[in-house]
Image (cartoon, rainbow, N blue to C red; front, side, top):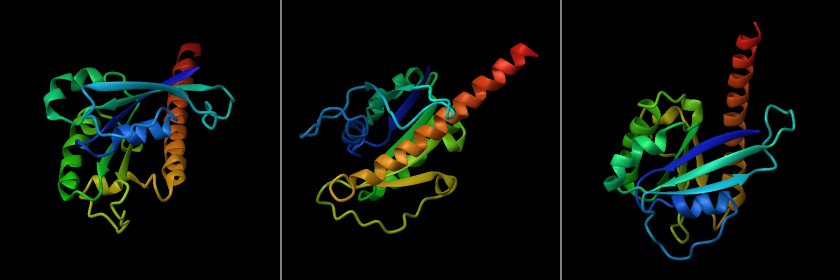
Amino acid sequence: MLKAKILFVGPCESGKTVLANFLTESSDITEYNPTQGVRILEFENPHVTSNNKGTGCEFELWDCGGDSKFESCWPALMKDAHGVVIVFNADIPSHLKEIEMWYSCFVQQQFLQDSHCMLVAHHKPGSGGERGSLALSPPLNKLKLAHSNLEEDPEEVRVEFIKYLKSIINSMSESRDREEMLIIT
């Protein structure tokens, strides 16, 4: 059984924990409490299997605190990560600039492929959730971008997240198959 480690990173108060709980069908949190360091959610998704072989997959979703005081912990969080989801509040202009730093630290410096990274523009309840085009600078504008509004259209982000998980698992499965072929030959 394949096991994938996915990091949820991004600026403070971007909605990472609420989104992580929703996508893993964990408990709801009604009041804001900043994540201290990291929270690890383990889950399985019946819609995601290993390369259509029907083999189940397990996931660890690491909900990482957005405060820079935890920066010394980041190398430990990044170790053996298969994917990174950068969550930001699309209604806070400074978040657009901050996600460049998150991308640099968690994707580029870890040599993760861009296909293993997903951006989620999270719209908090009551924010209006304007979905206009976001002015993302290169290379962020090449990444998969999903909008999340758990009040108006909660299933949209779930569908996009499942597609993302499938791509991570397919990549892991192909890599494992190549390794097995090298052993055989």
